[in-house]
Image (cartoon, rainbow over all chains, first blue to last red; front, side, top):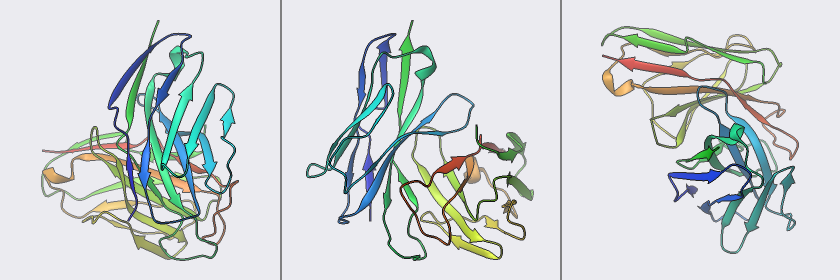
Amino acid sequence: AQTVTQSQPEMSVQEAETVTLSCTYDTSESNYYLFWYKQPPSRQMILVIRQEAYKQQNATENRFSVNFQKAAKSFSLKISDSQLGDTAMYFCAFMKHAPVAITGANNLFFGTGTRLTVIP
Amino acid sequence: EADIYQTPRYLVIGTGKKITLECSQTMGHDKMYWYQQDPGMELHLIHYSYGVNSTEKGDLSSESTVSRIRTEHFPLTLESARPSHTSQYLCASSDQKRGLWTPRNTIYFGEGSWLTVV
């Protein structure tokens, strides 16, 4: 079974500063995907960034980047130049990769989330 | 924002009532999901579907049931609500085809339905 751990229930950061959210996971799979999702208050959860485990290069999406350490099973999210609109719950998620259509494959396992507050 | 809608957003009902949470998406996605999320806790997959007439139970056992008669609708029903069912229920869909995931696929979420059973 896969587990995803986010050890920081709450974090805060000053506007324009950089913050890093941590995520670790446990799996015996060699090929999988990792995701960070953002859930603003009372709004839809949206995908922030994704990483394919077979890619060594860390993913980057504008101000968001990850530090993927496969051996350590660590997948942290760095938000640069934090903005007020970044205030949200952030969820780390894991998906096992299945090369064929197997029932139960390709479903997301989520961590408990980190509540990030950007302070003006 | 994604075209996936959930109703009602907020619902308070009495114990023993039957309720249906509606979820619809206009993206033509085959795969749909229901997640349950207690406050401050992780999301747990309770149901998913690969398409019309396909439904599967997720990782977390749930007394709810689902149906998939039309591609765009994936309603969740509780026949007899109990206080233990109080939670947020999130519906989602993905653009994966025939159960296969590629790096370009994305899962889209609705805004959630907050259910309180008193």
